[in-house]
Length: 241
Ligand code: HEM
Image (cartoon, rainbow, N blue to C red; front, side):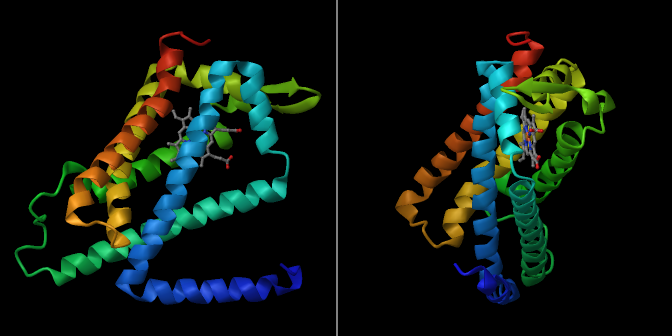
């Protein structure tokens, strides 16, 4: 792509997005697409975290590699933030529209067959968002335990933050580990229904496939929960130190 065309392409993309946000079908599509993007991030992040089991050098080398280019890192962070903001905006406006469309007296009633995950999407989403803010203050800005600011390490001649030491320190504190396990647990409850909604929004749920898609959502959520919770649990139980 010719870089001179970049502002024009960006403007066109913004126009498409604004048009999509005007209709409820468009907002459902945006919510599904951003949810899928965030789901992909969670899988990649989980695989990255599991490198802790390969030792301090491997995890720190990976963390240093992610910081190779400031421009790429900030581009990625902005994309992630944009996806979270759009996902939240669509969730809130679609919920308000749904409530308005329901007859008086039925406003708080859920359809028959609604699962706990589907009934608690808004509250689980808000708690997960609060957990992510806590998580960023803990490991990225290092404002919860300010000692982390000076914990540096060298891997293959490159200096970076000692992420391994931060993780071991953080999760050795029981309340921190419990907060992560609860946060990740709620994220997985949210995801289990999100996967199903994603296929529904795309109109891909025929009656025969509904139970398969529901099961796929639950299996994906369990795999992510085990993969994420394994790190705090392993530190608490001193399987890694
Ligand atoms: C037990 C589970 C988790 C562990 C052990 C973990 C670990 C980490 C670590 C160590 C960092 C800092 C990496 C570095 O400085 O190089 C980080 C950053 C981050 N994590 Fe997690 N994480 C977990 C769960 C999650 C979840 C569930 C989410 C979101 C859904 C998440 C989102 C993020 C984000 C957005 C960043 C900031 C990336 C950046 O620097 O811009 N994490 N995580």
